[in-house]
Amino acid sequence: MLDEAEYEKAYLLYGKAFRYRERKTYEERFKELLDYYREVTGVSETNPNAIMHHRIAQYGEPCEKCGKPYRTPRASFCAACGNRKG
Ligand SMILES: [Zn+2]
Image (cartoon, rainbow, N blue to C red; front, side, top):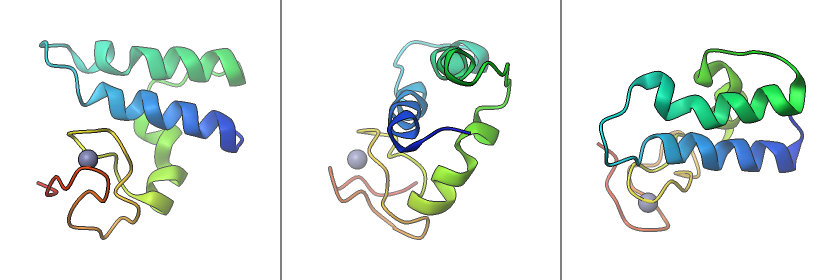
């Protein structure tokens, strides 16, 4: 498990994984997050969603455009940049 500050960092890495412009494989996109998680917890997790599960349940998915959380899982647009949820 991660504490608040660690979740914050992990969430940013999770959001970043969706914003790469280059073509990347799923593993490449989430590598930073998985590496970070292993560094902090010592656990080799391979499923990014398992790591972020609680955070996403609380704040919703990160925006595909700016990476900020949608605030709630039911939000229809991003409060930070106005992006409509796809
Ligand atoms: Zn946004």
